[in-house]
Image (cartoon, rainbow, N blue to C red; front, side):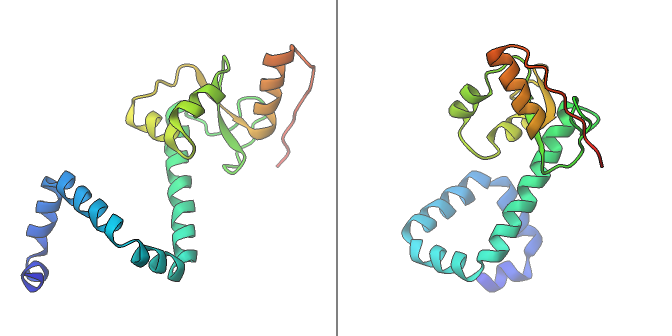
Length: 149
């Protein structure tokens, strides 16, 4: 069976695409019954897994930010360092939404899939986003931020 699949990769690829749910369910069952293999594999390839996760998260973040704004930079100070940029909820409520969606890139994935509208979101750097939060919570604090490259 395995030899036949190797000789007919196009058929296998098409079958996997047509039966994604079956493939995912089969992998989930196998993963549950073989946790020791997964643990050993992860430990043997830990650095690769971490780097892959970072690249994936960066890619997802860039896609989501580009759907929020054409310019991927802080709307307040102009910072364009992707490591510092965050999605800001203009009217607040980001903490509540993150508790509902969970940690990780759930918000970004919802934005990319179109399940989350972006009309109440903008892009800010970590510092400007924090000041925006403080201003919403305590009133205007008169802090000024400038970003120098």
